[in-house]
Picture 1 (spheres, helix red, strand yellow):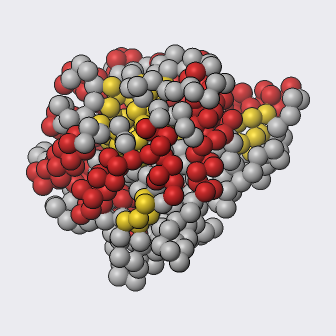
Picture 2 (cartoon, rainbow, N blue to C red; picture 1 turned 90 degrees about the vertical axis):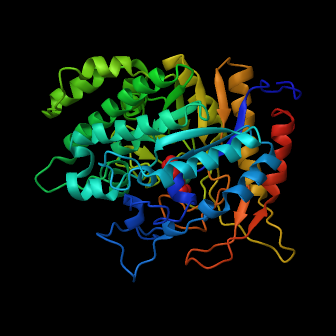
Picture 3 (cartoon, rainbow, N blue to C red; picture 1 turned 180 degrees about the horizontal axis):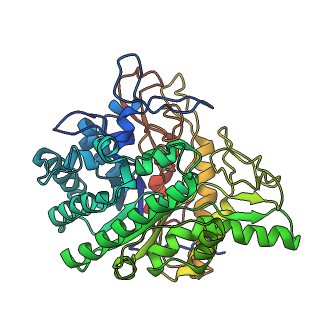
Length: 479
Ligand code: BGP
């Protein structure tokens, strides 16, 4: 590929975070508690705990996080300095509807996002907004059992319409549910709980229950898309899937076929959101397993009318699968047949580092859906050290991102994939979702805060900050 290759002028370079991982101020401005506000800190290898209520003796990292709620002006100024064209964040549902089932929204919460979006727009940075990023109102869990209850569809739609109406002239790019397919990891409670507020009872078949819960979300997502288009026909509303392509471990036909079957897990919810209907393989699976997923008469039509405009996805890694092997995968992925891939290295957290896999992912998704794609998360979680001169030399992060941007460029410039933008995850250091740690950092901007909550919250530009600035300035030419 020619080194002078650039991505198009209107390519959306930026960065991504989620409200609960950066904002803090968990009980300010009339905000109600969300599921993550009762999640304790975890640590390397130790799961985060779901508590019943906030208890003094526990530490809840989200309560302060990076304190973006109070620092957003300073942070946005730094994003502008890097040349961001867009910034992906989520709206905390509990700032708008503190309990989730109210009729009227909380004006202070709405005003906060008005101010935040205005500040971004002041610098010509487009907000890209996720409606639900792992943080539904906790009250809905206690009162209704989370997304098991179909009433949640109405509550979510009311919330979505409220914010889409309010910000219709400020936000063009929306996404409904973050990494909706993570719920396929239903045996890993953190995902099920934070995505849908569901804790399975002993009487339930967790897998069947997960499909019911996700069906409610798919209906809610489709209704939000449809109503969003009525509010402003220029809206671009996407799905957001965690895309971990699964390679066959070998060219043994059994491994190849197993990888195709296994990939159904990756595609399922995106298939519904993009094509507006459930794919044939899932009906067969439900039949085999004897699952009955309750659907209302109108659901088929709702799903059809609420197909998304683009496919947002996160890409961190690939996995390999071997037919007949119980998993020794990376823990997070949890796919039963996943095995270590000897051809790719791993991060300290066991995430396989595979830049070529990003080009592969882009090709797979574009071939399948023929819709614009948006890489809304990608990045390298690492422990950063501030050296004696106060500098953070995160060359490992630069190397990771450089290699991924190179492959992303190939997908666009050589393969013709229609890619809207690229927003590396955790552009501002934030709380890690899976571990609850602060020390697993992704940012271009360092935030002085440690795992125990110590630190001044001061912001510092890392070496990667200056690198990314040049990348954006040159349209991806200088890497
Ligand atoms: C994705 C989530 C993000 C984010 C990211 C990195 O699954 O959408 O919220 O946290 O992963 O994961 P972690 O923070 O656990 O390293």
